[in-house]
Image 1 (cartoon, rainbow, N blue to C red):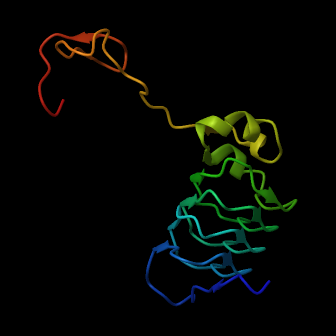
Image 2 (cartoon, rainbow, N blue to C red):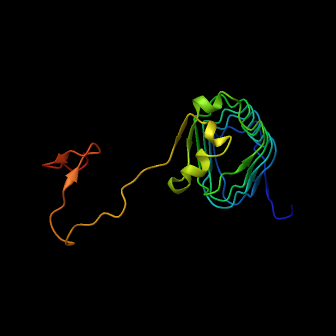
Image 3 (tube, one colour):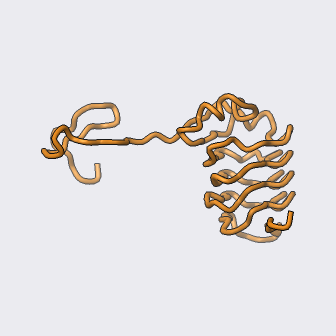
Length: 167
């Protein structure tokens, strides 16, 4: 496809982190057997990851942007260090039949958008991940009259009577 750019990461490079800036395709086997540990394509240009792209690499965390549509067969095969895969797309990417080895589903945490959690949970292979979650946050906070003193609570819902900055 003419609008794809190609990404190669030479095996001999010492860097352990790679950030995608404008690449739309990670070429097949681009990170094969490399020491890359952190891959960040959280931007919006990446659309596809080729077959075997990270196979046998030391990748630990992978963040993919909202436009990733496809992850090739065996893209994460034998990635024994992969612990976190973050997908920011509202639509789950299509994958090859062997994109992940079976042990990945037990070891790796899958992070997906809150609004799309049920989409991911309802389709293979995403529903095979034992640890899948969406980041939570506090939204739409308002006071009854728009004024008044702030009240602080712990994450367990316990009111903090005398809050201290930084705690």
